[in-house]
Length: 296
Image (cartoon, rainbow, N blue to C red):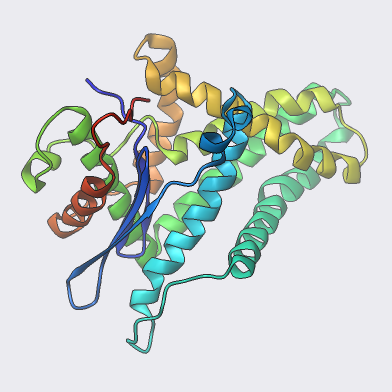
């Protein structure tokens, strides 16, 4: 079975797919038509070999995924404004930076500051930096899971997670060499080992190990150390995720299992036929041309 590097993101009534040379967005508009948009991939890893090195490429991939993801999400949202009028869907560089910055700040508060503060209360029972970091890591994972379960219950987000399922199913179909039709795609599972949800879980897990080397200094230094360590953690997590997606041995299957379960319980839902049609449109637009390599 082929293992492709093509991946995507669920949007508001749409899907973004990224292939070896193109990024495509397909959105189901209020009039039921599917609007598509295609742009060339403009990655730092293609411009400079340094950014494509192991561990460095993971940091680059995370940053680029955030920028492309936010822009794609806002583009899809522009077709579904409350007044029924379609917007331009274009974000300025400053707007994109502002959205990413505010999202990053929220993530820092929810998944770094709050777990760290709660863990501080356990200092009366232990002074072991390793144990305290393990407790903080477990709290971070719990908060992450609760957050995902909560948002998965929201009606609008449910629709996004259904498109997430359509994205995974269509990629499974392509990897298995079948024609991209609704009937063929419906046969495949909604979970996928190379999903971004699994990557985020791996970031949470790897952070427990990496942050243990920073000890347990004052609160301010703990928060700063977690921000500083994020590129290190994301770089390692990316490489681990690459290995998990590449091999099907028992070790990789075991490491992939928690991420797959989080997908099943929260971030991926079964799509309907119309959502699969959108996934097909987006995927077809980024399939490799002759001479291009999309292997994982």
